[in-house]
Structures are given as structure tokens and as C-alpha cells.
Amino acid sequence: MTDSISPFPAAPTGVGTTLEAHVLGGMRGSPGATGEFASLMNSLALAVRIIHTRVRAAGLAGMLGYTGETNVQGEEVQKLDALANDVLVAVLERNKGCAMVASEELEELRVLSGNGKYIVAFDPLDGSSNIDVNISIGTIFSVLRAGPGGALQPGNKIVAAGYSVYGSATTLVLSTGHGVHGFTLDPGVGEFFLSHPGLQCPERGSTYSINEGNLTRWDERVRKWDGWIKSEDEEQGLPYGHRYVGSLVADAHRTLMKGGIFAYPADSKSPGGKLRLLYEANPMAYLFEQAGGAATNGVDRILDIVPRGLHDRTPLVLGSKHDVQAYRQFMLGER
Ligand code: P6P
Image (cartoon, rainbow, N blue to C red; front, side, top):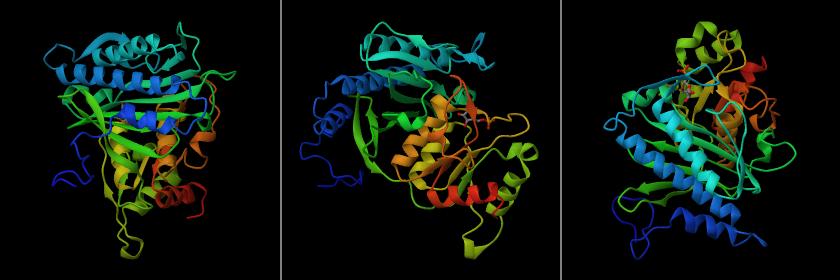
């Protein structure tokens, strides 16, 4: 039975698949699974649910605005940034499967009391500049196995990644290595229910997402690509429409769902790129590849970059395989 609203068949009882049931279902095929991984996924979902309530109530609870502190990135810390970070650390501290965390808001790696098997890297609240104007923001995370490399492992070692979008609905997009699945929070129940099973990034899209305000700061090859993608050429399906929210989670989510390309290139102001490798680029790259898309720094695969520090930055290009490949051709001077 498919009801008139949802494109997905509702369960006979009208009760959907919870995130917990979905993750546990995925574990059935893992001999020797201890449940530690599933428990970690549920802890992350709990943290997102708590942050959801704080974000929704922020305007009423005096939680908008700045703390007056500056973080390791040199950015003014918003009250909600600090709160989201505290929620994630507290929830993961209680989950003995998490050995340590790396956060945009923490200068150093935080070792937790549990000697668990996993490391979690996160941007607790991405899109800070949009918090006070009620534009979608989100939490981004990736999970690595604890090992010699600590948190400085390349993204190809990631075992799970996800992001939430605190938008018109709160959604959680997650991959544990078996495709990408979207869950929508039912605030009345306080549960995430499977709403977008098997998300696939279309082979090609029709929008490009980049901060055009940086045009004069880009490398000549980026400017050439930018001029090409907005040129009038019906045969090549151009121009693409321009969409840019300024929250990575929002721009990436739209690109994952509808296809197209998101790019935050290096520029004269941010010569190494603006976005952070460990807890923004890597989780997004993992998700896009799991969904059949692509993610590069313009030339190289994001997931193959070996981090040198917790807060490394990188140029980031995410999107449909066709569109990312076209961008790469400009970067290689092939177009
Ligand atoms: P700009 C938000 O502050 C953020 O870190 C990402 O979420 C977003 O993609 C980017 O910065 C926006 O940067 O320079 O376009 O405002």
C-alpha cells in the first residue's frame, strides 16, 4: 500500500522502519558483530535528536548569537556550535564503543574513557553563519576504526558517515558501507524513520553550487569552468542553474538528491581550500561515492588524501559523476 503523500510504501501497520532497526538489519550479515557499531550509530542519532530540539528552540531560549569565544579555526563560536559540540561529546563519552573524537570545535583530539573500537570526527553544527537567519544547518560526522593512524587516517578507511539537516524537517542521511539511506525525524515520536532508502546521486544534474562572490580569487581554470557551465549551449545541456545556500549540508544534500555539482575551490583567500578534510569533506565524499557520485579536490579523490592535521582544509568538489568529471577536465587543462 502506498499512501497519497509518501512515494514509499507504508508498512501495513503504518509503522515505518526505525534507524535502529535498519542498522541492526544491516548487521545481520556481519558474523561476530558485537553490536558495538550499531550502538554507536544509535548514539549518534540520539545526539542529532538532542541537537534538533536545541536548534528548534534556540530563538526562544536565548541560544542564538555568539559566545564571545574564538575557535581553533579563528571563527567566532556561536552558542549553538558550542552546545552541539558538548552534546556530541557527552553522548559519545557514554558510548563505550567510542575511543576518541575529533571536532571542529576542539583544538586537540579528545580521548574518551571508553577503550572502544571507533573514532568519530564531526562538525557539530555546520553552516553557523546561517544559524541566526533560520536557514538549514546540520551536523556532519564520520566513523573510523581506532588504530595506529588515530584520527589522521584517509577517508578510504571510513566505516560509516552521515549528516543531518535541521531544515523544514530534520533528516539524517547515513551510510554504513551498504549504500546511502535517508531517515526523517518524527518529532512526535522522537524516532528517525526510513524515508529515502537507497539514495542514488543522479549520473548528471542541472545545477551548480559555488560562491560566485569568490570569482576574482579563483584560479584561471576554475573561472574557465565557471564561464562554461553558465554559457548558453543547448547541445551540452547548458547553462546549469545556480543554487547556493552557504551551508555545506544544505548544498550537498540538494546535490546528492538531485544531482549537479557543488564546488568550494581553493582561492587566493583560502589557498588550501576553506572546508575541513576530516569532518566535512571526507564524510561527504564517502556518502557521495556510496550513492554513485564523486568527490575530488578538483583532481584527486578526496578519500585518498592522507590528513596531516585534525583541521586540515581542502578544496572540495562533490556531485554527479558526469559533472565532477567535467570540472576535473578543466582543472587538468583538457578543456
Ligand atoms: P562561504 C559554513 O560556514 C561553511 O563552513 C560551510 O557550511 C559552507 O559550505 C561554507 O562555509 C560557506 O562558505 O565562504 O561561501 O560563506
